[in-house]
Length: 407
Image (tube, rainbow, N blue to C red):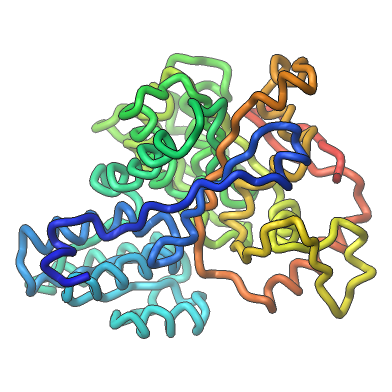
């Protein structure tokens, strides 16, 4: 694609929506996978960030300098878009980001700055740097209506690709860019009543906490502004964002290996959209180990006792054989545990006959991401094996803690 064509057309790719016979067999429904891992930057983030980058070049010209703070995937999306547009890009990363991620960014022509122990510190450093760069423009990793609009295009594609309206859409949540796009996309195609299930890991759940504090622990359908006073033992502080009239939690620390979900606070505009949405948002938290096991199953590991395979990965012929980072496999956890799915979708779903259940159409957004390796998958094997001493997973669904059996 030429630079001229890139300026007039969307840079992102229309991704496949594939029927998963394997997951469908497990859960008894028709399961579809929206494969955002096939975007040029290997994640959904390329949609919104490439749109933002195109608008920056149109507004500021070819000398524009795209500058972004990222844990990796947003930065890679910006770098790939900048390369396609022929403009400069600098990515600010927290200091704990792997050398492999840094090398991938440089491979696409981006300059890399490592600073800050967590994303919020990295973002603060970026803001200071943008002020000193005459052609610099701060590219948001997730908190931008332009990004949400770009991400919404995946729902427009789903509408064309699905045989009918889905009965639920599942996605992971960090800062809220993806779910913001899905909410907007559903509105665009008339799917406001379609349930959206937002999944996070327990140690990195700023969005879950945001919905909880704005709905009195999920008990009110009408947003209720809480006090900003919290106990010292609380995992977050609270800020009232007047522009959107919502309360936003700022996590004091993150305790999950799902680094791509590692936002300390969600986008206030997305929280507003979520609490106002007619079809609502179902908020779910899962432990890291459950996401790790799902990553291995989606990659093709046998569900047999992982202790038997200390030096090898056993591949199932009918699974998907795709490596996914934890932020992505978190979305897929209900697809590998029928009882967990039933708890999420509620008593009406649980009461369906097998024939009625087969008619249900569920979409899982495989959001992608580059922060995974075979070495990490082997490490996940050891961690999951150690977790086998317990026979159930402890999950949270809209304020209720539930134990679901390991299947």
